[in-house]
Length: 162
Image (tube, rainbow, N blue to C red; front, top):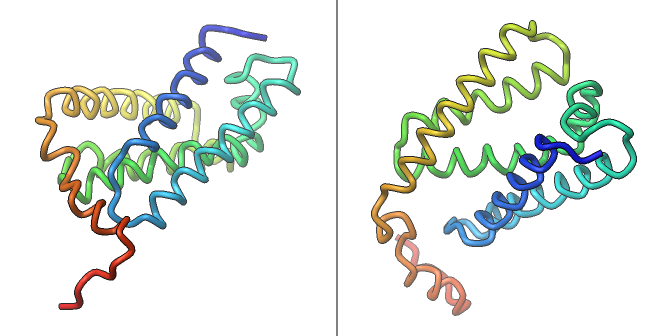
């Protein structure tokens, strides 16, 4: 069943995939791991969407075990938050790096009361909006990094030892 929430969730998944294809992470292994996590989560999202009679978001919410599959999308998202917190020292991404796993694990393990889940979700949405607005206003050169490092890494040469 296709609902507006399902369309939004699928759109979010696609947007994250595009971000992970274009984001600059100097540690290639980490970059590939985040892309793999995203892919696993998207495959689980498709499987849940096809096999469940409920809309996608409801099927995930009502059966927290489904988070074992789609949760990998949020692992990838948390990796992006962590990267942004580490590279740019953004306060909101430091909080998001903690809130996302806390909220998802809390729901999966059923140890967060509904009111706490709702509050954390509101904080998540608010901080994600702050993050997105900040990214829109950020000058391009500092955000994309030094592309010469990527050219050097792709050349197959070893980085000099200090």
